[in-house]
Image (cartoon, rainbow, N blue to C red; front, top):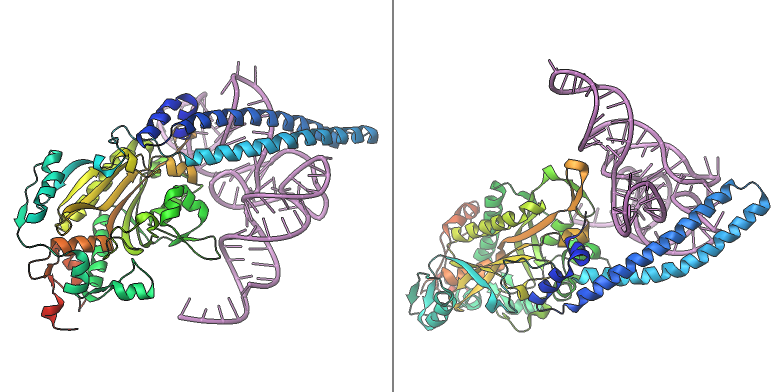
Length: 461
RNA sequence: GCCGGGGUCGCCUAGCCUGGUAUGGCGCCGGCCUGCUAAGCCGGUGGGGGUGUCCCCGCGCGGGUUCAAAUCCCGCCCCCGGCGCCA
């Protein structure tokens, strides 16, 4: 039962070096890790030998009947302890350094991942839907489709679609980020009426479709401890994304992935119980500390939103197949919403440390003239399960291995709303609601059914 | 938040007062036996390191006392019960 990274470290470190190089990281830490691991093993052995010696003497103490002999043995044990403690102190230092280094290593990049240091190297895999392209964005659209070798049929429009931020606040009058910034700061929002119904309907839609496919519905804790978070994410993500609760060892989750990964932390799962497919529904809190001034307007990039998240615990031999399944599920949801999208295989330099491979589903945004991320599906293989101690037990011989963990967005509410506002608006600012959402709107007396109308035609405020 | 009880190798459990190599059962894995199944019998069943025979560590977590800690002391986490507070 070994962690894949530790196994490579001992048997074939060059694999790890190549992987780090693909991520654009310094591969020399692998040499350092190999050296530290070797030193750790040597020290551990020495300490173990001294401990053994001490155990032997100490056991003799209880058996010694002669008081003088007893005193002599106790004295000898004392001397051993003194020597042992020196070595142990050294071992502890090395161990801690080794541990930190091992935990800083990112997952091993899968061979199918395109190599590159920016999203320009993301490899489009397939396109779906018929994007509406404003004439002014035509060139950039062709750049993102035909130039990448895909013939995508599209409609050219001569009027410029209104960006989601203006749709929200000005055209529909159903969002208020100005007052939100007074109350909470930038990147917060108030949503009203029809957009709230839409938010809820989107969540219900994703929940309905995916539970029907066998996912188990979960409301997880919205705050988790440090150890759990460190098991799920890397330090960079921690710094940029995570809110801490003052005075407590608790952090607000940035996605349901965090508490769902922790669900079986430190536990063993019998192989015939796998795969375990969970569907988390939760608010998500993100500091967006590394985002700079990107997407400052509107609700594309915000500090809080609702999300339905697919999460799977899997046998190692099934995880790659399951990754395809997760992204296919997300595609089905976005096809239902009639949002034109593409799926990209994310470049090595853009993968987070936990992921061995990641697909993004990007929806065409008519007012921005580009495809933008709505869904992210990752296979973290045994990276998270090693850190969290989630293992599977093979029936045959009761052998233990690390499970593989996968996660994928189903629907993130605010982002999906931006896609709907931009794609389904007409020239008069009326927003058509996708038909698949209807069952989840009909249950409410005041919810819209087919359209969301501009504030001008509603004639209020 | 306070008082009391508790947390032991997947599950249950003995040991804790009175410090001296962690007890038994269930489940699971392997084997034997066997028309089949069941039962029965034997062995195994936490982690790390080394390696055919071994060693170390492990009793919620972290410290302390001691030659020696599941056992004694301190802090923390969690569970159960009672009280308080509150939706």
